[in-house]
Image (cartoon, rainbow, N blue to C red; front, side):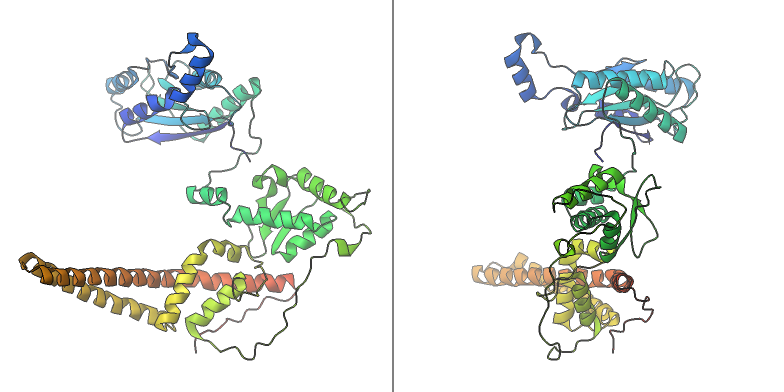
Length: 459
């Protein structure tokens, strides 16, 4: 869902002046040099730089002093000194003038003539947005603003109403805040939960000729979808999860109507005119069957592994990364999300193989031994530094510097190996959980009962 006409309010406890200065920062509120140059070339009468900062019930230039004076007059200089809010619009849909006008109007409707508000429109990003710095103390009564959940809903409702009046886009089904790491991972196309769901749905639509077949294809991929026509929102969840996600949250192409439309388009590409999304139709099934590749060979000559190395090989196999001829894809959502950390697992299995680590106790012993070796190398390097300070011979200085560099290189390697070993201990419970989820997903997809027996890697 495109982030348009979004709103948020949060408290400011540390420094009111810092917040006011941030909102009214000229670098964010004044047109860029390039934009000024283009406007100058088009109209010489509009060459003055325009700053989109307005004070409501206060002067924009002296907003901090006026807000601080009100707080001191009523003795309300502690706690939440202010509230910081923003209002963001769809990229390219609004002009800076209209953006600032709507922001000032919103501040007046929300806080009236009782609270001091600084409204600033920022132009430094690709998306125009307004910042609101609200003094928490009422100008007339000294009562602090009650920024509860009702206040936020009122702020958002007023913003949506103003956007509708100006024919701007309004989010119909707003979702919650996305963590920063997940947001950038999704933006970069990494296998996050939502990205994997989108990819599975796209795959299911390409191989479906009705909603019933779509449900079946999704189950084969490790997802359970609820496409009941009586439901207002269709849902999707992993076979190992009890928490469902409404499909419309994945984007405009994943609503009920969009999925039906996409399946119908794909169905009609094969020359079939009549489409009923909820009934089976007589179609050539060979048109929709994916090609299968059979591996011809024997596993008898493979060497038998055990311990942590065997667990990592099994883990990589279930992920579809080992061996090279392995073309399977994991069914569980947890295993496919683990693709994001493939480099981390590769470093771990390399350390396990090189250091012959069989169990977690071996890893802990390796960490203890590495700590001792690190301390010894640090002591040795300190001795080399002391000798360098007292040495005057050029040849001897070169030898000592080489010894110092060797110690530094060894320290870097030891610390890197220790860090990898610590991640092995940290990831071991999650790896066991992912393996269990993947095996359970495979059993459910094949119609088998879940296997409750625990896989033993240690001998």
